[in-house]
Amino acid sequence: MDQVNRSPEILIFPAISVGERAATRSRQRVIMECLKKWGCNLDKIPTIMVLGSGGGTRASIACQATLTELAHQGLLDSIMYFSGVSGSTWCMSSLYAHGDWSQELEKAEAEMRSRITEGSWDLDVALEKAKWAAGLERYSLTDFWAYFVVYEQTKMLQDDPLTSIKEQSEKGLVPYPIFSAVDRHYLQQWKRKLAPDAWFEFTVHTAGFPAHGAYVTTNHFGCRFKARELESKKPERELSYLRGLCGSALGDFQTIMDIISDAIKNLLVSRRVQDKVFRVMSEGHHCEKILLDLLSLEIAYLGGKDCLLLLNGLRDSLNVSLTFKEAYKSAEVTIQEWDRMSLEDKKRLLSQLVEKIFELPLVETSYEASFFSFLRKTLRCLLNWDWGSTNNFLYKLDDINAPEVTERKVLHLVDAGLALNSAYPLALHPARHVDLILSFDFSSGDPFETIKVASDYCQANGIPFPPVNKAELDRDAKEPSDCYVFQGGEREQAPIVMHFPLFNRNNCGGGAEADIEQWHKRYPTFRISGYSKDDFDKLVHVAKMNVRHQAATIVEKIKELGRCASHV
Image (cartoon, rainbow, N blue to C red):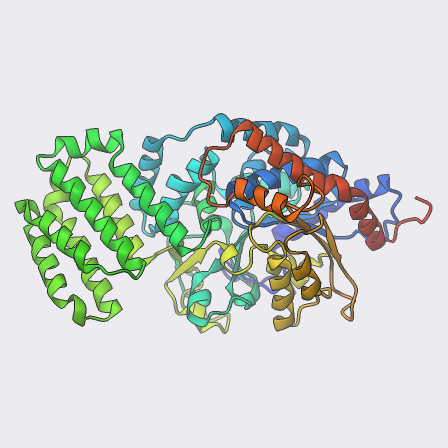
């Protein structure tokens, strides 16, 4: 069925966009030439998709190495789609910015090596970006994460938007990119991690919910719509923001909270903020202490810890200065009511306290009003754990029967790894007809979690998927092999899935459990910085080994799908 196009920006269709169809047709010509070299019967051109999992900088480096080796083995030109989650999206965004990156992977790998091991990030630049974002309609922790965490990890900012990388995809020069996220509302309200409704995708043409067949043109993502009417046009956000949105789950809740807390503390004590903010204020020292006390209070509240001692300390700090007399009164009320209040009431009073601290006397008399405006919004978002806020392009839309989406003015999109750490739901969209999934798992913990959750997801939603013997995988979890092939079974329409655990008994020294564990310890997901050249090179080496050792098997499976000539 063709897409309904009564509005030029909102698109309702059950399949894939016109732009994606055209781009994949162009890509088929490249794939055909690749298969010809292998002597394949071209009656059927198999659709192959590469999936890269999350895993922070580890995933980004390993993803780059995997693609470099796929190209070296002559396999890259057989790939139709490339999709990533979290850290793999950092690699994706940097690659696609290179234009026809399929011809420059060695160069891209060398650039990444230099950037991550020798590069630096600029706190001043990050702060200016964050202050600019704080002036937008929908600022959230995603903005803070993009500029103060992802930028620090990747040593890279990308100011161009996603639509700027369309040309190479439309010409079929590179695999068609699909960035992944999930709607936090589904995960929180219904605990529906296995529901297709939660998944959100970004392509160079459209952004939206595949399960609802509801999209907006990518350059209009973030604009304000109501019942299809464009109420307010917003500029398309840059790739740096998209990397923050797609890559914001570096660990559990406590880890993420600690990273944000440390980033704010480092900002407050930085030379830039000290020189331009606190040292030019008559009560700069008191202000700095109050802000640090407020941050500690919020972190304690979010962590479910006792807050009264911290509240008393903050009140005492506020009492030192007349500037904060109204905030002092607010703190007094909060302390008196604290033990009698519900969690929601506590959050409400803490929100009021934040606003009192950042009232006009502080903001308007400071040398850097925009700094305090940014910090106020950040602390407000932290208290409400507000991530990925964007205008809902489906608000009040009656074309789809999904009131849980259409009645919300704001969407909250977060890292897809919170649902499934590999983008199987996007790969398994029936209109994409994916025949072979090359799933490269760069995650920590259970190396088979993604394949097991994908199997559960498909079973829950009636989607064809090959049989997965979880008991056998559990036995291999501590010492996995470098590749597992899943195919066949009762559902003949299921794709073949090849699953590649990053660290395994074939590429990690002697392959013993202790050796593999050492690799995981050397490359933790939440490692923000500090990669040496040796760290980088060894990680690249093991990632490439997985492709090199299994290249013949990949070709064999592609030939099976392509009904290749038996004499080859």
